[in-house]
Image (tube, rainbow, N blue to C red; front, side, top):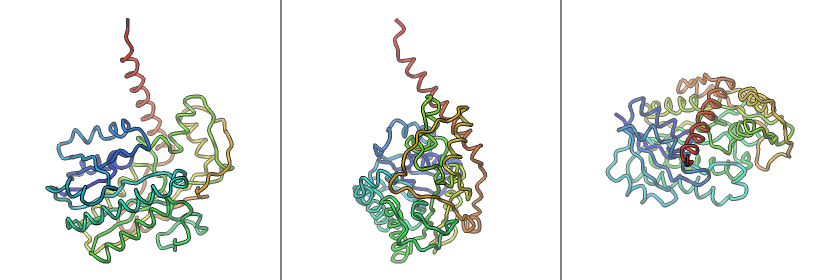
Length: 336
């Protein structure tokens, strides 16, 4: 039974991945610092299924505290592969707080790499982002594109910087690395600040949808189960291909324009959207579009979920979550 260390395990993608790896027969050690970017209670709910599994162990750890914090927490643990999902998220907030993103996304990654070096753990799956491509004109985005002048937000710069550090540790210490650039992942448990989640809640509340720009910006929306399948395949590849250093795109290869996304969310909710127009936000890119041919060839990645199917699953989860919350509130109200 191989052991996977998953950082950011209480988050949207990390919680789904932990459940997938447990189902696949891994032992999973999960780390999270419960960053206050959104409610701790939501992250604890994300963890609920994994915490019931005897092959899952959880530790609350902040990577910003350095490799010694990890060494103390994991002193008796054997780890076969690290999946580094933990990061400070959000393009807009990174423009306002660039130093925080340097610390959380770059320095914390170096701390993790240093712990791996000291603990002699050599397999790393690193979660990067499509943001590193910026407003690259050539489409779709390929992994071999030159990106030094591409990043247009501190978030993107932090992710590309972290990729550079994974190569440094591959070169110096023989780390086995797969960098994966995620493309706008959505689905059940999605962070409440992200577009699909915000739009669905606003529509269900009868409120207008804020649309930034003219609606022509486009994103390569990728359903979480497809992304998690790509991660699981990537881990299996790492464990059987020593000497690896590769970067792949995990997207859907089907960009959806913002105006079309809003219509699709409205259809899934059963409400005709009313738009509230705003100018483009600083740091936002015009389009993301993944060339996934390398991932198909390397790990057999093959996303299956259409936007309509994925939105139906998300809306079903949102309704169940909101209904459960409403029941808890009602149960807490005195009857006399």
